[in-house]
Image (cartoon, rainbow, N blue to C red; front, side):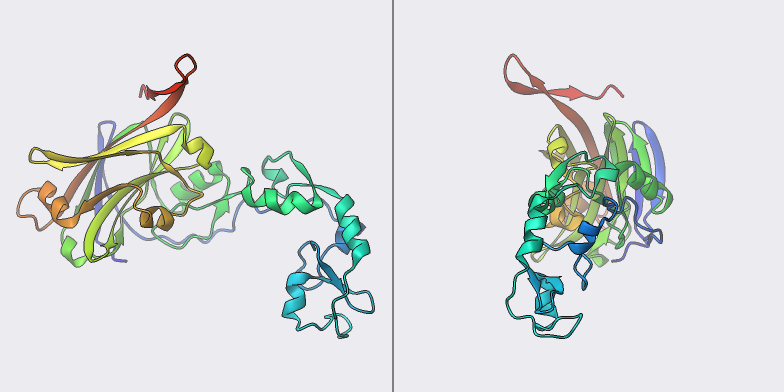
Length: 311
């Protein structure tokens, strides 16, 4: 990805500044790792000796009573990892009954989830828990950081040197001197604080089939159900012509590449982008104008009404 020579000139709420896109890799430890309830003798009994995860039915055992989970049973080629006896198809029904009687807190309780679940349904909840940590939304490098939104905001600012802006309107100019030499590129991420929430603005070049295109889209730093409360518009244009896009921001639960590959944003063909850039059409100077607003439910009419940011 050729991003070292890509320059972004932005104007947000009347303030201009230049930003150079430089890849950055995070070297910190993930934040908000799952914390489970203190171990007890029962919890230890339900811990698989191979993978150390909690065991869920079917729970298998050897003739000597050593147990392990069904996933690890296939990994150890049907041999008990403790005594090396053949496992066969013996189920530990007693331990499965113990599991049925347990109620455990969500493993994300330290991140704010107050829920307690029967042992069997705990995994199902945790896969969709609204309090589970988020992945870093930065698209310029493979970053393994996870955490809650406040942590990720600090991480993006301090580790990735991302631009942070306050306001619900923006005027961003993306510049590249030799755009025909770049088939895949990602410009520096920009984050906006609007209506007390954070939004990530992405802009990049890639191949759509055989056609080189540019794409701009917005992601919401929160869950999908919260993202539906907002809408945004993007616009590019020049010479008496313009392209517009209006939609709902995707949650950062959806990865950057997933959103891009679904084409859920403003897509501009390269030739059109160069036409909008003016001049000899050899360099990219594309201005993207955007706005974010909040959808308000009108209880009388039963419809959503846009609420505009006052900043």
